[in-house]
Image (tube, rainbow, N blue to C red; front, side, top):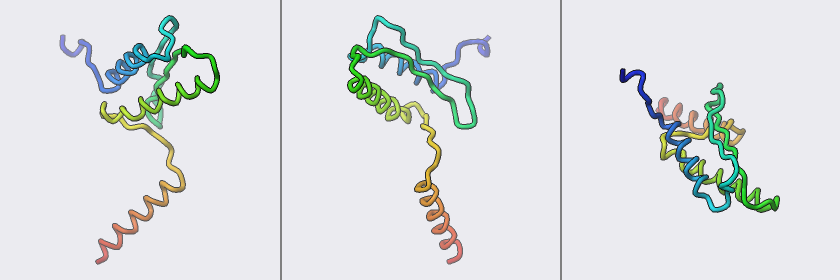
Length: 109
């Protein structure tokens, strides 16, 4: 039955993309475990866990490689129809309040 068949979602395709990206990343150790998996969804979204090893054991290089990988997967998320969740900060809330005030003033005019 069609309902029992495999249905790909944007999250599933995103996970597959990240796996492919890691498999082809020059600084990821290809002989060691690589895992990209979903964790339990919660009130803040659907966390992804990325588990991989770098070719470089120097701590500074490791941090740079990790940052580059996360920069990339954050940047491409919208291509999969996904948004990255981040708790709002005071600046975000101030911007929202100012936008609400502008809308309220426009309504009153």
